[in-house]
Image 1 (cartoon, rainbow, N blue to C red):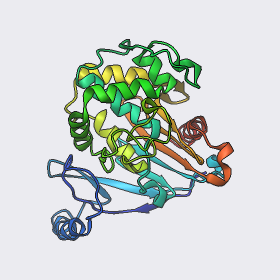
Image 2 (cartoon, rainbow, N blue to C red):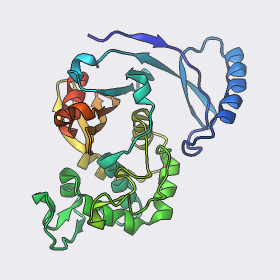
Image 3 (cartoon, rainbow, N blue to C red):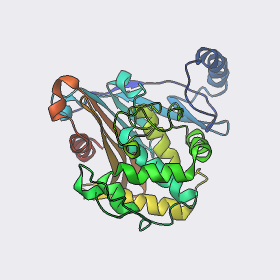
Length: 305
């Protein structure tokens, strides 16, 4: 069972104002003055704030104990209940640390492809080069749906290159995707094959688990600027399974040295529960995978939500 400690924090920011950066001290100083004024004007408001176009709303952060679900694996969890505006954070410090998104970035690259007419639908096909890849499901022509399910790097490398740096960066800024850093466009060259590298794979782009949840909430929330057809196609390829209490959508990601993700949301009646599970355990790396992160998420969603 989870142990909960409520934390009430008031944050004021302008939605879609930009990406995270190291020069945050001045922003924090400015926000303190705004927070004090806001507190005086809104004495009945309790909790943390998400702000859209200078509109104030209350969000609550709860510190929880999900250790039983992680079974000794080092990691963290962020669960956001849209209806109650409540975050549940397990290992808060890890939840707020920016790291490589790995293959979870395929959610954003798929959306970028759909929004910029590089991809028309989940059946949009990229041609296989004929080169033998270590993952058998990558060795053929693939549709968007197939490439997403197989987490095929070469497919999404083609998508982001066709969308281009300017439009990719613009989308990252719009959705406030972590540090928005695509400076290493071609990646860190950890793989000898260039089509298997990218700025989202242990390279310049980083995002925290909590930022993943905020981004997903914006993409699938009511205030986004995206085409409804694009979102329907994206949601379709993200569908995973029917859980005990809702429909599960998401994307895994796995990296070297015991790093793995599972991010997404669960639709429960008219509500969405957003989540991010991140594992980082080099000492126990044999037990770490995207599927393990998914297993943890499903256990939490079935038992705690």
